[in-house]
Amino acid sequence: MAPRVVIAGLVAGWALAVASGFGDEKAPAAWGGDYPAFHMAGKIALDGRLAELYDFDVQESYEQGMPRDGLLPFLYPPFVAAFYAPLAMLPYRAAYALFTLIAFASIAASLVLLRPLSATIRRDPWLAGALVLAFYPMFRAVLGGQNTALTLLILCGMWRLLHDGRDVAAGLLLGVLAYKPQLLVPVAGVVLLAGRFRVATGAAASAVVLFVASGFLAGWDWPQKWMQMLGDYAGPDRRFNLHASISLGQLTDLYGWERGWMVLSGLLSLWVAWVALAKGKRDLPAVLAIGMTASLLIAPHALYYDAGIALPAMMLVADRGRPGEAAFFWVACASQVAAAALPASPLIFVLLALLVVVFGTIGTIGTIGKAGTRSVRIIGE
Image 1 (cartoon, rainbow, N blue to C red):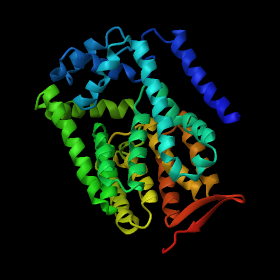
Image 2: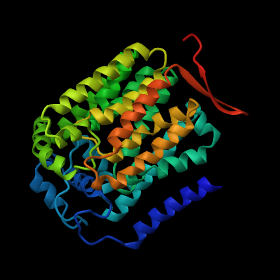
Image 3: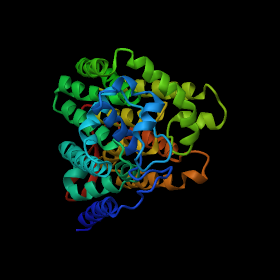
């Protein structure tokens, strides 16, 4: 009963916020979080002006009338703007409400996809749902109009397809993550190094299709414009998101180590690559969990709400007989609320610790029996 009450309370709170009109006034922190950027991009796509998508002046003109004081730039490829075009036909508030409903549906679908793979979800799906919705990074992502729930759905769908032996289909779905290449590249690399070579074919095919479609939509010079805009925004982004970033680069910037992100990310990438090569064929789920979590730290741009994709790693830890540690990580991620009083986001260290614990579970599978949860060694290890 309690998990259903939690879910109902979260949904009711969201509905009340949408209906109340609270926060309609312009403010640096917009009502709807980051959704003005996506709504603006959808409107640009509707007007057939995607060739101007990365012009800051054009973006700012389209954000006029939205509850945001100052430009919130759109940082994604053109095909993502096209995705938001149907939503942009609606008024801002209605579009935001519909998109958050899509996020709720994506979370539910992710749990359904992982259920055959997770004893934790099978044992109590309502509790799992409540924990995912109330997970601080995911909760903030949904309310903030971010797409973390869609990213989670893509990764869970890929995981399920790999489990079912449908590698090409898994790759095709993974390639949709091209809207966040900083996450796609590490995850695809892990799967490839784990010996699932056909996944790379599918991922490359769907990514190429999406990027070619972007060329038809926005002109063939869009990658150059996109990279230029990202370069122009990198400096202000590092300052503005000082306490929200969970990239290792945030730590090195803090201490003035100019090349530190490359060094630390390179070392972590080498470790993840070794894990994938050495353990991938024996324990792909753990290797996937490591790849998904490490991608957040390796990426040059990842914010705390992106940590929602670390949830499968926590469920895997619980499935393998360590529910206490999984609960610790779930709670520890709420420490982000104190990030402004700290030198950097505490989630950086939480995610590093999670990687260590997941690595320690390699070679085990969790089983749920009458006596509770226990771990057993994988046969043939």
